[in-house]
Length: 431
Image (cartoon, rainbow, N blue to C red; front, side):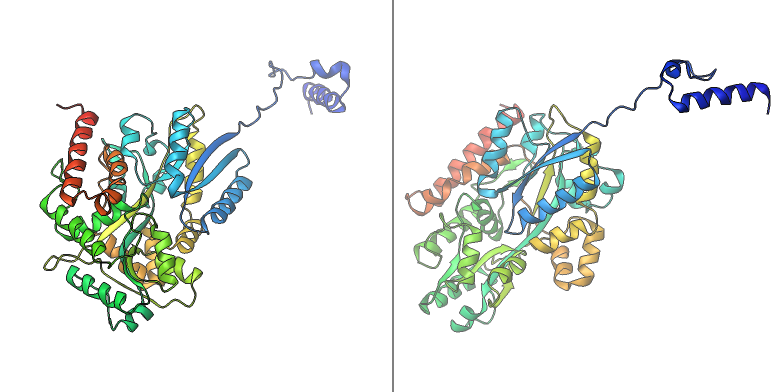
């Protein structure tokens, strides 16, 4: 060893001995700055407001959030799970206080994007995650050239029925047309055991039943850049629903009991059939293990082609004063990872929104494969129109007006059409 090296080694040894008088002078020739302590890692906060789909939702999400935070101690997730009936009020209040959620599970997004409230999800999600989604669902979540939302879960809608009630009424299969629906509902009513057809015109899902019977008559909400709410086809569809109610062929409280409540009435054997999502086959056997149930298409006007209708919920990220895109990206990577995401789908009974998960679950269950194929061909709500939320909110007031307040289907839809055109002009700034 050279004498220079020995001299330096001795200096290092003195430093290691921790002699106080020498602490400030123990640096080598190339060390000109004092040694700094590494900065403490900042904690990222994610306020996550999620919708409650079933009794399994809360414990499922609480468990996966806890697991994620254990693996990512620098990220804190404040989870709030809310029933759909109060979800809108919760996040609307948060937004009004300028404290929007960092992550929201919802089914609308463009009005938020139009107001400049949302982050572009392309700036958050990893390229690897983006490639996993079904392209058609991702396209539904794009507005004005940006990815303001990402798909979360999806479902197809079909008729579900109580097999025991059908057998008692002498019905062999689900009705496929309006005339069959009316005939079968009457048969069930005449057994004296149950009501025929469950209709949800409550605040919860009136937009769904309007969609089924608008489209089933050959109409729809929106076409070629214009709202078509009061089209003759839509008027015919709503008039048919009212006729079913007036003739006592529906459940007695279409504007009061919600879809989930009606499902339980089907399970109790007091309602013959209703339109619901494919989650019926997961949730109902859990609550009613002895229920024998069957499924069929959404009935359409006689002579019309079969109707396929799909729904997908999504996730949006609001701009906040603490937005941490890296933390959000990490959480979304975890949320959609296998087997975490597959567990959500299995417990809630939804269809996956990612191709790999879809292929995996389809291989295990032929019904999932069939429903996913139907979803690719389905009609959806016009969620890409910024005025949709406002129109949907207004439509929720129509149920009682049409069924109880002597407002004709045409008058009700004319009024909703005028409102839609007014809001569309306001949103787009046109005269």
